[in-house]
Image (cartoon, rainbow, N blue to C red; front, side, top):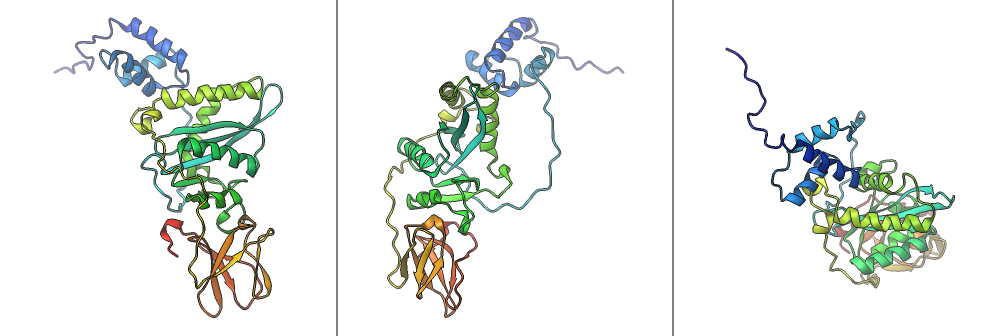
Length: 341
């Protein structure tokens, strides 16, 4: 008895190995950041899947040609409890927004990039160099995105300005604008960028493809971003999408109303307007609510003889004591979709 060799009897593609190596080298030159999975999909597009070597064969050819590199695996830390967040099942269920890490172009000019993605389709909606990272600048750019693509159900961001604040529920003035448009707000945990992992993974690809090295100036960097966004949405297959491209899945939102919805409260609630410093006048005293709500109307719902609940629209933001003089005591976060006035 002798063991048989594991080599297949017929290797049809071996005769054309040189031809496939040439095609693979050309494909790798065109997309140097792609691995074997994406290159396999790309080669199958041109030949409708006929005669293309298997995924493992293409991976082996890349290693033999010195075109692939092994990934450095890091030891995973313990799993931490995460607050339940809305799942991105369809287009415009959840958008992620963030600033790509600041860097400088070759002429020394500072470059801050605002990015927005649809988490269900991985479609990049915005990749824009910002002159400033202020509330006004970000709101103006997001207004353009809303008018072009419509409104999402949820916007997820980190806690840095202008996306978050130290106030109740970490809400900022930008978040209050989103709430008035009917968009729910989600923040990641401080110091846990993995809570928005798919968006951060997109940032890694963005940096590798457009910032190494950086462009000569900001205008050239923006032109790179525009070309890259078209490539990322229309050409680059995604493993999370069964190797499809984001543009084949994403559809614009049907929610197009850009006018803030009027905030209404039951008639038996006391309504107060928050002043510029985030305070309201109540029981002949100034009580602090939060600077994010300056200029907005909040309502006080009586609970018992000791305290009242403070609402902004359907969102419970905290409680005020009837006896003391302290400011708002923030409440535990509950998604606004689960609250009823």
